[in-house]
Amino acid sequence: MNEIFPPIDELEHLEPEEIAGIILVYLNQRFPREEDMVSHQELTFYQQESNEKRMKAFKLLMEGWEWLKREGLIAQHPGYSSVHHFITRRGRQINEKDGIKVYVENSILPQNIIHPKIIQKVRSDYIRGEYDSAILKAFREVEVNVRKASGLPTSLIGVRLMRKAFDPIDGVLRDTSSEVVDGEREAASHLFAGSIGLFRNPSGHRDVPIRKDEAWELIVFASRLLKIVDERKATC
Image 1 (cartoon, rainbow, N blue to C red):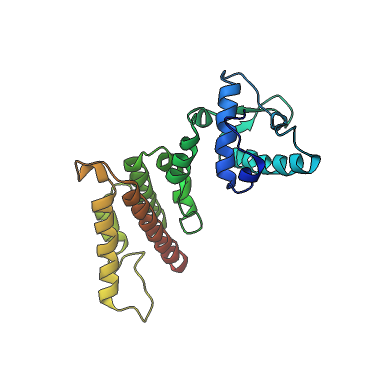
Image 2: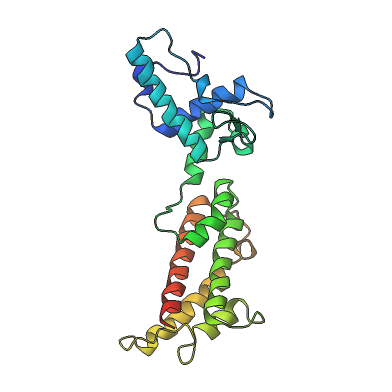
């Protein structure tokens, strides 16, 4: 335990996710079997310290514990009290201190700006580093919602669907605001058609793996497109 948990003075300078990483390494070592149950009551370290310091340490450890629960790295064990938990499949994959850093880096998506429908579809793939799949799902969500909002048939897919829905003359999702000029409506048609044609199936357009930063940018871009669809739907 002394090799895993730092002194309290160092512990209080760590972020919750860093403390969580330390706890998870300990739990995976202490409870290696899938059927093992874990509990925050295991976090009874620093017993040699004063009551005040022990309480400070326990509060810090609980920050890490709650972070693990929030991220789905541990979960309440079914059939037992709320005290009993188990290490999830994702949690079992993180067995080293640096592993939690990699997990955090891979899981950062700006949920406050990404459309809820997209974050729900792509988050798991993004965390696992399956960037092609995450991008595909993000733009597929755009396509699905364009079809729903426009009421166009399933026979129209991809670029043809976008051209029809955002046709600058009679497209259901064209911007009909009086201050919008025809050139802008045409540009919107090009934007959606080009985006779906180019980005919906990224692995079909290149031989190199998709980078994390590229995936991040495209997911945010798809989110913006979907928000435009929502805006157009509201004015139809």
